[in-house]
Structure formats: structure tokens, C-alpha cells
Length: 121
Image 1 (cartoon, helix red, strand yellow):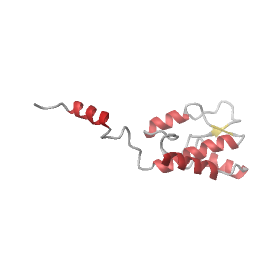
Image 2 (image 1 turned 180 degrees about the horizontal axis):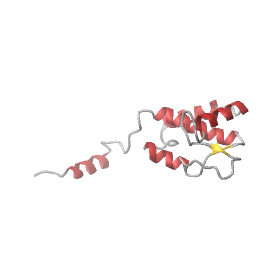
Image 3 (image 1 turned 120 degrees about the vertical axis):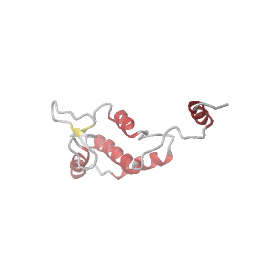
Image 4 (image 1 turned 90 degrees about the vertical axis):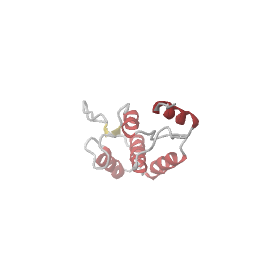
């Protein structure tokens, strides 16, 4: 008797034999970028992040960027947040790297004072 492939897949998931998700190869850099952007939003008065950016980020990259159950992700995120200095120069650099036309990871952040300007992630 042949067992359908879907039945095997469901059985593997329920027994814990397969991971529920796999992080992308560059998950560490993605986590560092996102958490640096979050800290910039908190420290820099001219920087903001659109509501829904984290959810869009998680969906696009296939993992929870601030997963409290994942020690590796949490450690990378906390280190990135602590490393951010909050100086005017670091705020400008955050916009350069993560702003609407960011060089590292565009559209994580945007300038807060620009009325009507949005760049959804």
C-alpha cells in the first residue's frame, strides 16, 4: 500500500522531524539590518518606520526577525541595537543605509518630516 506524499509530510511535521521554517542564508545580516533600523527609529527624531514593516519583512524573508524564542536571532538583534550610537552622524547613516533609497536595505526607514512621502517595504 502506497502512502500519499502529503500524509508523510504531515506526519513529519507533527513528529518534529522537519523544521517549521528555514531561515535564509543571509538571516544574520538581515536581522542586524532590521534591528539597527528599529534602534535608529527610537533614537533619531527625524527617522521613522512604517507600521507593518516588520510583518512585511518577516513575510518576505520567511522568518521572524525578532523571534523571542530564538536565542541566536535575539542576540544578534540586541547587539545591533546596543551598537547603534544615536548620534546625528549615525542617524544620517541609518537613513543612507535603510531609508527609501537605502544602500544596504532600502525601505526599512523613512524620514519623519517628509509629509506625504512613503516608501512601503
